Image (cartoon, rainbow, N blue to C red; front, side, top):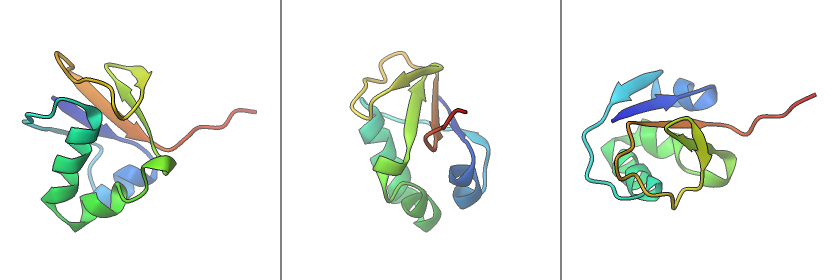
Length: 81
């Protein structure tokens, strides 16, 4: 699965994207796996209320299922003007 990181999430992790082999069933499961990798992931995912997620380019909740998903993206909330 492709995992994409945007804005400060990318800065904390140090990567714009990566291929992740996962057994995660939900986005929350994926976040837990990533947090366990190392400190930079734990720092990036420390406050999920400051993050949004998209699964296959559609906004989703952190309890969204990942069955068949090809891409997950993490980014801060966006504002418009």
